Image (cartoon, rainbow, N blue to C red):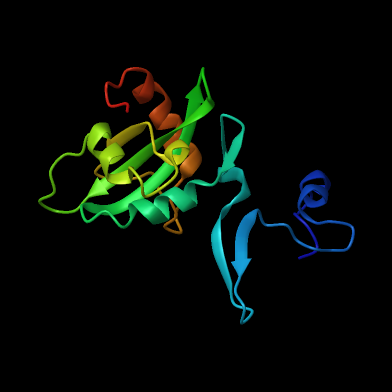
Length: 153
C-alpha cells in the first residue's frame, strides 16, 4: 500500500519511513512461525496502571458453557481509570447471568484485576458490514448503562 488516497497525514500515521504498514493488530508467533492475531492495540484497557487486552479476557470467558458470544470493553471508572464490561450473548436456554455469578466463575481462574466488574446480557452486537463487532460503538452503548447498572461485582 502506498498510502491513503489524498490523506498524507493518515498515511504518515500508518506507514513508517521504512514502508511498513502498521495495522494496529496485535499478534503472537509460535515456534513454527505461525502468527495468530490476538487483539487490537486500540482495544487495550488501562486499569489501575495495568495494560490489559480485552481479547485475553474474552478467550477465558468463552470457556463458560452459557456464553455463545463474548465481547469485553473498557468504560471510564473514577477509581481505576477504566473498568471492564463483559457483554455476552447467552446460549439458548441459559439462565440470566449476574455479575456476582460471573465473579464466582472467574475466581481463581484469572487474575482478580482482569475480572469484569459489569456483565451485560445482549441479544446482538453492533456490527460492521464485514461482520466485525464495532467495539467503539459497544463501549459507547455501555457507558450510560454502567452508570445506572446494579450489576457490578
